[in-house]
Length: 357
Image (tube, rainbow, N blue to C red; front, side, top):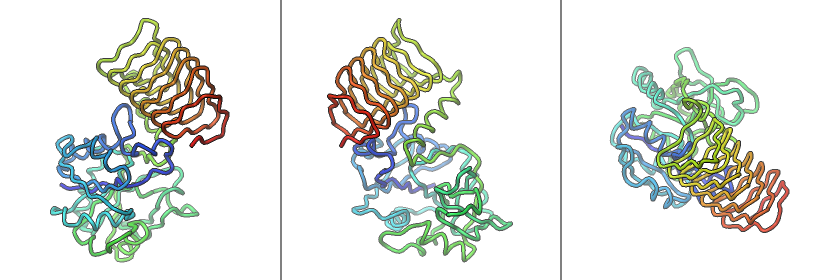
């Protein structure tokens, strides 16, 4: 099977972390979102993926390469953003097998999604949308179904709740869908799906498995912490991790490969690969990206620290976001919703809310 993954978004709601790192490479317990999804697709029979890329495309290509988890990767580059439909039309000549998957790249899902194939092949629509029930559907497109599971109405981000079944961002489509997508910038949700629904050619599939949309910073944290809670013993330590004599681990916690831990980790701490946490440092309710250095007696709570950030001794960081390669000098306090853009050096206390550009 083939799949198109929409991977060209700017990730504006995840800034400042997305200033230098595409959101599909954000780590979920040590593994990028995109790699997790490619592994799931491989297990359900997908052998070729077209990655529709634009923003930070080189970083994606460098990390993923031409093959991952047995899936052949082809890159379709958008010179200008083409929405959710334009990239599909652009990739039309790369698809030679039907039906094929279309999906947003910034969601987590599991193998149960393969159930969409059965209902699609039984009822022969042009497209089938995976639907997932959520408590607050206002952020998403919602649908109204008839008794045969065909979608009668598709409403993108409704003001009033007509249903808690939302568009999960995963679709199965036939070749005919290309007839409904013009060249250029197109929205599947606004320009294509309402027409298919009016023609009774849009089917719904209720998907009850794991589903997390990584659209906002709190979604990213939620995804990591939810998977932490699902770990056996609420703790996972990867290979080649060095745990010092004075270290203390309070589950739930995750420690990525080649990290060196001498401080206190957890509860709810995700330490990704090759991080260093020195003596007397404390990290809780926080996520460290890769190669982060936490100095002696520094305390990190309720925060996200980007790749290769250097946090010196006796630093306090609370409820804040630091992007990649930020340097924080010793004794500094960064608290109360501070966001710091990449490559900045912090030489004095910052009490938020504040954005350091």
